[in-house]
Image (tube, rainbow, N blue to C red; front, side, top):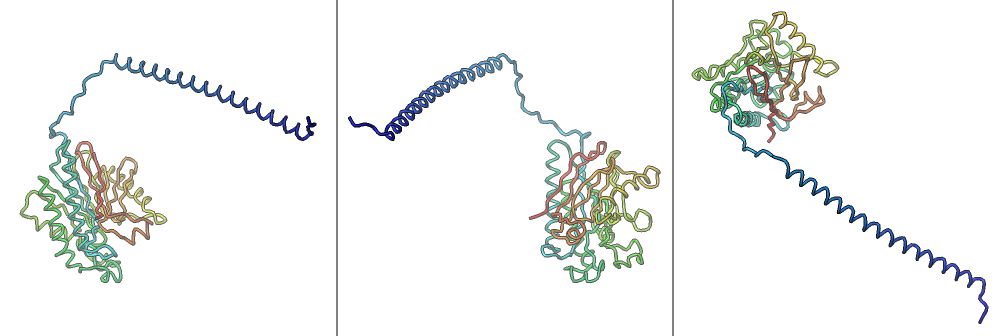
Length: 356
């Protein structure tokens, strides 16, 4: 027998060691598999025990039978008032995607949405009365800034005597078909002022928004179910009104151009004005209010100033350079619609989207 070389003996030893390692790994693997199987059995037993314990526990419970919801009839004491905000339609204004025709369509759409929301609220309470808070800038005007006549599709005369009366007559007629009574609190906006920067030279009564309100009041003179409250321009209340809908539902209505911002942000101005007006009301120098509503900024929002809730309404317009430049914001075409209980205040609020 030939004598093995050193290399051959080394290779044989390595093979023997490798074989032992493999055998050891096999035994370890078999042991782990047996442990896994035992754990699976133990887990299955545990699940079965838990399931039986839960089942036995449930079976010992005495559960009451479920009753279907009862239909409760609306009671007079729970009646709500529908309170839509209407502002910043700016009839005849032209932007890349806005004009009188689009404005008319959105105002009609808004009236239908108000009816739908009132029907929704009526599923659990009675909603027979509507109070519209018209907050100004219903018309676009014609002399607010130089060159404005090139950015409108109808004259101021047409806005006030033709398009405005036609569009809003349909709006209020739709509401009268749904509600037993409609009250309209009407305040003026800055776009209705004549003379641009020289507006102070005009009589305060001379405002296109106010003219339109008077015309609508005359158009509905034969309909006793609708009432227009339009402040005249001959006293300190020519720019605002307070809609008193109940002890806890008094709304201060103003357009919003009275608010001056700080560093381009109007919210500081709201804080200053609302607190100041509340102080005057506390001293009997103006009528008290629980809420405040306005428009002007075309960006719908709401805020609390101490215990006074404020709503800033949107616009039916879909593009507004003022909001973009001044607020770095661009609100979608929208209007707020609130529901109110006279003895409790606002109970529900909706932001009505008017995009197509």
